[in-house]
Amino acid sequence: MRNNKEEEKKKESSLNLDWRFNQTLRNVQG
Image (cartoon, rainbow, N blue to C red; front, side, top):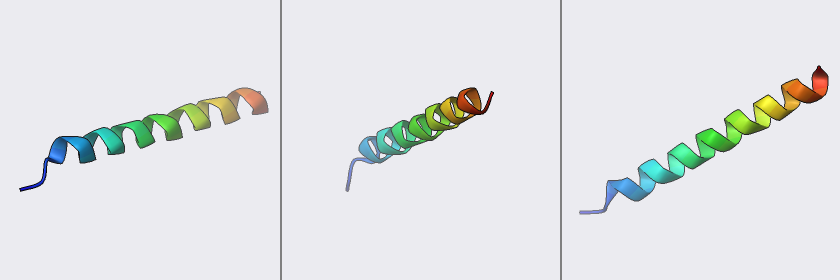
């Protein structure tokens, strides 16, 4: 059985990246 924790971590970090990217875009747009 594969460890699902790694998958969860990957998903979480990518979600975080998306969120930060969106926040930056919003800040740039004012």
